[in-house]
Length: 325
Ligand code: SAM
Ligand code: SF4
Image 1 (cartoon, helix red, strand yellow):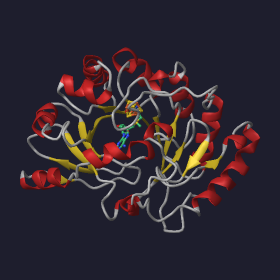
Image 2: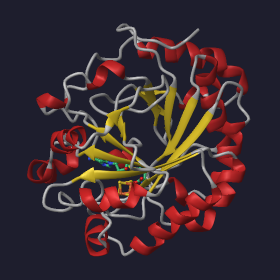
Image 3: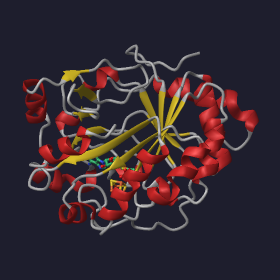
């Protein structure tokens, strides 16, 4: 039976974190870098397989692998392959900072990865390095070229809008997608528990970009049922498209179609505001699938209608690396 909640929302899309660890220090996420906790033991390939098998049985069609930085896991190709072989899963996507994409894009594609999102907060090298805290701009650019070369079904770039950092780069990003088949997505900065101060200083609404696009003849596209939260625009003069993610928009949660599982095996009903439902105890044996499905159905009945971000709620989320942004 399809997973659905008390507000009629159906869940086709699972965002699966496979590690909390990250090698970047993005100002808005992990400004001091990842702090190693003693013996964090992330989901194994078999635990991941059992998780996705259960979700697929109740309607999940698309899985996004995320983190932390998923590219840091040595067994990433095995993880992708395990998910690929599950009945009902039509698409596997991954969000990465791209640091080792040039090296592994072909192997990840061969394993079954269909789509890739690469985070690029700035196309100006020194600003990119300042935002991410690492000098990896050239590696990430090489990664994008390689991703285009190996031919994923879809390539998206994520850029978090940050006042006083990248707020005048729209023309640069537009030039970048003019002749590249890439969906460029601007994401409004979200407030998390550990980065409230940065949020207060640097949050920027996407409304200015939206107004600009509409005035320049960009046309909004329809959403598919397993699409993410972006409003996507296209233009006949551009090969690429442009997406806007505005989590503070009034009706943002109405179209929510996704659930999350953390790298430590908790199911999260929302990025914000709850501690998660333990599922790791039910992914130890293949025979536990019915019990896991029962728990998933019960848990989604408690999903709130909204993330209440507008009221300043950051819930239990210290930063998005801890839950898989
Ligand atoms: N490390 C990978 C990466 O950066 O692409 C995957 C994990 S990261 C948490 C996933 C996405 O969340 C990235 O595009 C990142 O820019 C975005 N993100 C992280 N913290 C955010 C915040 N506070 N507000 C909005 N987006 C955020
Ligand atoms: Fe790492 Fe991604 Fe967070 Fe940046 S946004 S610190 S790359 S997890």
